[in-house]
Every structure is written in C-alpha cells, then in structure tokens.
Length: 291
Image (cartoon, rainbow, N blue to C red; front, side):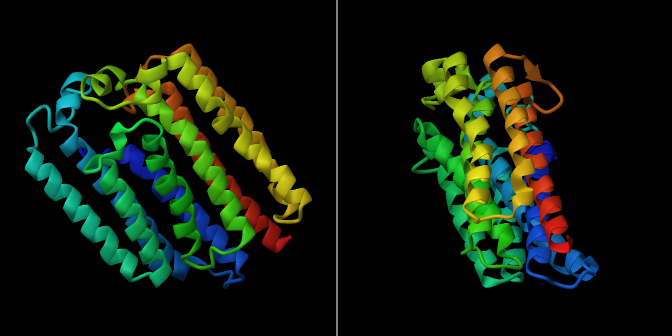
C-alpha cells in the first residue's frame, strides 16, 4: 500500500469516473445508470487507477537513490521491498490495467496504451523526468489531456469541443500544478541530475511560473461559452481559478510538507482543486442534460 500510494490513486479514480458519468448522460443513455456504473464505469476507473499505481511503483523502483535522501521512509529505501519486487508490482498493475481496458472499448484501450508509454518513459529511458520542462509535460499529458479523453471515450467520442476543452484545461492546470510535487524533492533531484523548475529557478520563481497555469485555464470557459462551444452552465467552473490561485499562494509562501499526504500543502490543494474540477463538471453536465 505504501508503494502504490493510495491517496494519489484517488485522482484518476474520482476524476475519471466523474468524466465518465458526464459522458454517459451527455450522450443520452438510460437514466438508470447503475448497471453501467457496475459493469463499465467502475472497471474503467479501476483501469486508470491501476495504471497510476503501476506508475507509482515504477517511479519508486527507479528513484531509490534519490528517495534515500528525500523519502527514506518509503518501503524500498527502508528495505521492506526490493527494487525487483517493486518492478514486479509495477508490471502486475500495468498488466491488470491493460486487461481491464481491453474489455471496455478499443478507443479507451488505445488511450491506456498511450498513457502507459508516457508513464514508463517518465521513469525509465529516455527518463523524461530528468529533463527540464519536459518533465512537466510528461505528467500533464497523461494525467490531464489523455486521462480526460480516455474517460470521455468510454461512452462518447473525443472529437467534440466539450471533451477537448475540458481536457485542455486539465492539461494546463496539471502542467503548473505538478510543480508542487518537486518542492520536497528538490535537493535529492539536484543531487541525481533531475532538473526541475524548483531546483533550477528556486521555489518562489517556480511558483510564479506555475501561476498562469493554475489560474488562467479556468478563464478559458467564458470565451468558449461566448463562442457557443459549450453550454452556458459551465461558467461556474471559472470560480475554480480561486483555489488555483490559493495553490500558488501556498507554493510561494513555502508551506511545509504535509506529513499525512507525503508532500506539500500546495500539492494537496492542487489535487483537491482537480477533484472539484472533475466532479463539478460532471454535475453541471448532468444538470444541463435534464434542465
């Protein structure tokens, strides 16, 4: 459980299931969602959660030396699990994720394959985690853009304005928000050649770089509404710029590490904002369908 970090699995589970529910009602499926929830939505959500678990295990198995410095309490640095066992756990979860995805539909399965590519190349050769700016992209693309589109594809087509806009907002937000995870690892990352915005420019400058991505993506929605691309009910999501700005404040002021969730307060707030984004989007989608 420590290896796969259960709290981080809530993000793909909650976000993906919210998007799937939104897609389900958007395309006018039966109001009785329970059969689909049990047979399709929960398995598809589990597929994405398992993929995240695999990524967490792989990342720890390939970052042992850095974790000895920054996170010595993790199971591999403590000697509770070997690197080989960590790799086997990652492989098991990758396999489980793909098996489940193959039972959903072809498009969803293709997205899972794409996300898998990004998570593997993030931690192993060419190890995009070590490359400045690219490491942010390699997190934001699979967890934001592809994750949202994969979830939408369970019941609908991704080649429509609504899923593309929502996925783009998620990508931009996570591009900035994922900087928060590098604060507690800055010394270890620097020691082992991983260049991040935090250890390259400092915490305050990195927070300023993150600010536009935490705040402005939500302001895209009013323009999309005026252009007739999305329903007017989605204007409410622009208020998420407020917690996005709060994430920046926590980053800039340097709130200390959150011992419960193994990272900074800004990191936890970023995840909670992402939860609100997906759940509010799903709620507004359902309400717009029945209004």
